[in-house]
Length: 241
Ligand SMILES: [Mn+2]
Image (cartoon, rainbow, N blue to C red):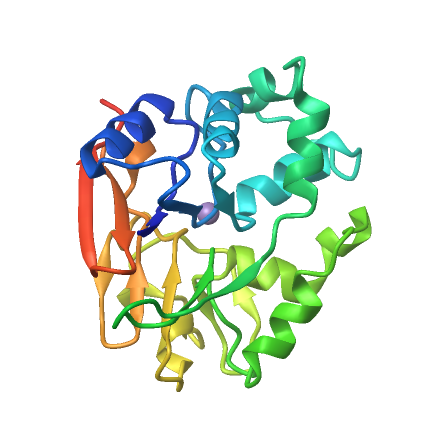
């Protein structure tokens, strides 16, 4: 079974609870994070280690982008919640792994299941050939400068954007997108399912071709996982407020 988990944000206990609840079988099942494994929550290094020790995979979320930029000296902001990661004995290893995480991933269909694209924030309106975009965004080894690329930032940060593909910093509800912008998925014309995280205020939702998995675990919401093979959604309670 292939499981995709929404934004974990350093909530190791909740991740472990979720894995136990779904009966995750290391070596048999496949684990994916939809990005934002770290940031805000209590144990960022623990979450990264757990995912890696289970053979799990992940895409880049905006919190991984920000943390990597701080780690590599590209930005000064140092979030206190990430100190345990910056000072971990294995920080070098963990950041080497983060540096080369893909940004946009195609998850092939299994037995009767639907294929999907996985991205943390969303897709740009003018991205027609997603395989070509993924090939650009997922190129490794990734140079630190690649973290500043418009396309990479868009995929990891967007919630509301213009039809031309300019995103705005906004974290409220989809109906309240700033003037001139709409939720990125309003522009999506494809029929392939797109699975994303990043929009905790919107929570877990499903439309015909979009599946949102960020249900605000670190804000006292829930941690959500979706099984691509069975189309099952499982949730556990998030960090207590
Ligand atoms: Mn995010």
